[in-house]
Image (tube, rainbow, N blue to C red):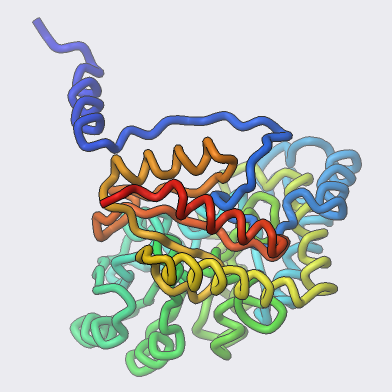
Length: 380
């Protein structure tokens, strides 16, 4: 008798359970009584009245959805305004908005990864970059984490067009990429640099203008950045920023732009309102970094092992996947939501709690969060 089509799933489920790697969805209430250090609301804007009204006003004016691909019916004057504002704020010539940061990364890599070209990708890059490399027509060389010399060697071994892609801030440990050294390696071999600034926008650079701006690379003709609107901007969606000719090319060649429904007007309106707030209140970026530094200093002083944060991600090591899950659950039970990263989400196989520093945290909330993480920590 032939096997049922999905019998193999049972075996995969059993292996996950034995390894302590089962993931479950946990619906949350709109008014949950938790201090949220699990999400990516770095500047505390997702519930800001100006941002929520920006989203609501856009929905009232333009409707609940974009109604189709942006090349058919989905582009509004609001989309164009957001693109122009993002490019101006971050220091690039032009921008193109997508339905998610994931889609933006897929677009950049598949549309810019020419056949017979090479993509050099950091081993710690986000899954969307990994998938973009796989879907592109280019060969891919995965190099050790944050290693410009390895990038240089990979480029030297290739004869032809190439691009280097890296997160600006890596989401697991919160460390920043050596963008200046990567750009120098690219220019030595005539390669382009693509920077995923999902965790840098709003936190790094002057007033939160992002890691490429901080590195003096924004607006350069050989640099492209991708961003998400769902972290510091408190909304939803993504964008690619770069030279005008690159953005025009994406409009004509990026499948996640051409064949995807445009970003919903509410998300566009919310992101645009958040961007205006960041411009008006540039101190938010510094506050987010200061909160991260405070969390790191106090947790490590108490004996926990954590990665020094370069932006707003604070990563605290756990003894095992099972204990990481239990630790996060104890935090939640005490009223604190924290992230829990386990294999395969962590490339080095080490499980972690991931705390998000937020610019809107009060000193008393920082005190309580540190105390909660310490009180619930596993004994080893």
